Image (tube, rainbow, N blue to C red; front, side, top):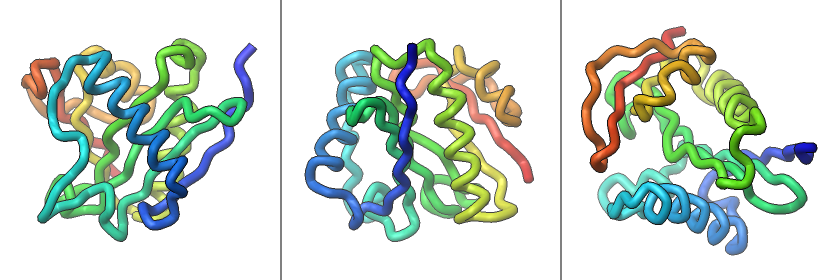
Length: 158
């Protein structure tokens, strides 16, 4: 049986050191280790997306363990005309439980609360097209490689 998920939405300056460590570890475990994407996950100047004043980090905990994470970027941070959801990560042991849909529902509610009436653009792994369709996203590009993984651009219009 899946544990109840508790959610926390934070700006960078609201993280405790423990939360920051857990979030970065989850991102590295999923993107660098599991998906073998060797890239600098920590943003550097001039963008510093993680630390931007408007960036929202969404953390999901089960039994006091961080099991899911994503970040929401304001318009102009990743895309000129759209807000964006990215760095979507779910711990391996928590996959296949419906947690991804719960995470996306939480993220879309935060988008509407903090960035009302703004369309959202994402760079989705190609195998997740149907998942994102269920949340109102439409594919707007052909497949492209990002870190040698097939991706497509998708948009959820307001």
